[in-house]
Length: 380
Ligand SMILES: *Cc1c(COP(=O)(O)O)cnc(C)c1O
Image 1 (spheres, rainbow, N blue to C red):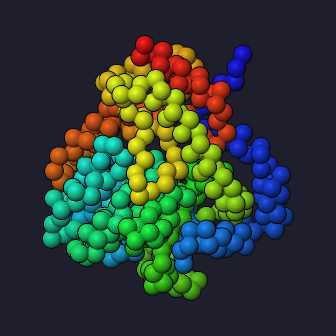
Image 2 (cartoon, rainbow, N blue to C red):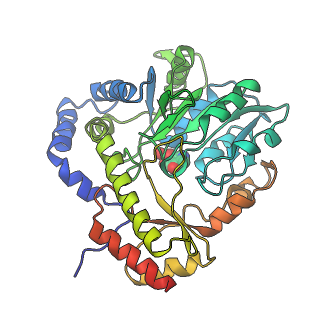
């Protein structure tokens, strides 16, 4: 009997670097420096180097990273923050949590990322920031988004939880890693993310020295000097054990991105062979301005039978996931606090049609063939 197919294979990935990871963790345990140990600083320095960013501030998770970023910007209750309607809840939840107003804009139906054309319609005198989300592993179109933000004096907080390692190319040829282009970038090290640890973790990225200091203070109870609290902050730390794991895995991140991109290309080739006209499904669309690190391989089932396909695949032992079944405007928690800017039809359509297939660094062509064959047998 063939192995059970999984959405992600964290165990297979771990086994390949087991010795390295185990000894890094044992070092932390030997030192018993569980909070704020040397591995935290070392990992932050290595991530700064990898991203080409002056400051990486580790924190407890990606949601905290977003919250702390907004806290550092001196926004007032009722100030508005623009966010795509099709995203993970955390991108918008932190806005509401801080008494700010999430203003939802639509996404591009091909890339699933925030539609830059929708931004002007979202603007009001209270607009203070935009949170572009690099969904599923590729960058939003940052050049026009940053130009719009500059023109209207808006902060940009990149939600880079799904795209660490992806690269954006500006029209003059300059390249930048996602998470390093806005005022602040946020990422998550949740185990299934492209750079995942063995529990929760996150980081905040900025090139602004003043903000870096403030973000560090907010993540540490608002203090610079122990027991002297200048700001209302929170307690958000990356565990030393997690930092040790991440420092090992960061060395493999480019390999991991490559493995995902190779697997994605194989899926796409096979689907295009069988469904060249895209009658049944739309394979992921790669933007010309970004590399794609395929946090998810997400197809759109254009024939309007996504849920039947998902159930059929499950019967064949093939897992698949719907990220995300409800756009923000349909979430109960947001009904009374958000303002919709223009039509959100693309976001509704994405929620109805998307399906993410098994995608991870250890996936084999044999497994991918089983997935593709099952998808095809559903349609034929
Ligand atoms: C995972 C994720 C987050 C939150 O990260 P946590 O570490 O789980 O708090 C935020 N935004 C997006 C887009 C994510 O995928």
